Image 1 (cartoon, helix red, strand yellow):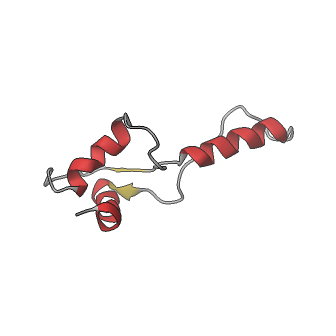
Image 2: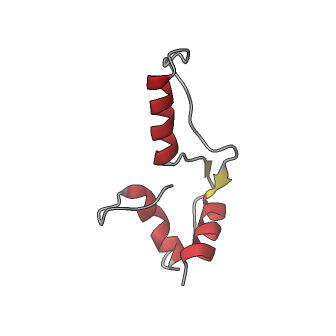
Length: 81
């Protein structure tokens, strides 16, 4: 999750705002990874510039996935009330 630059920020931040603000007392028991849009942009540029990279398929993700609760705890410490 990268920085939010627009007022209409979509579903990803919307998912955590109620958790961070305490309006949603529970989170789903799930685990997933994210990639920052800046990392995705950099990967696209590398594929365009470096002709030795085969652009068929590549995966951009963080090195370790976290649970929804772990993400919420991180966000709450940084941005919570």
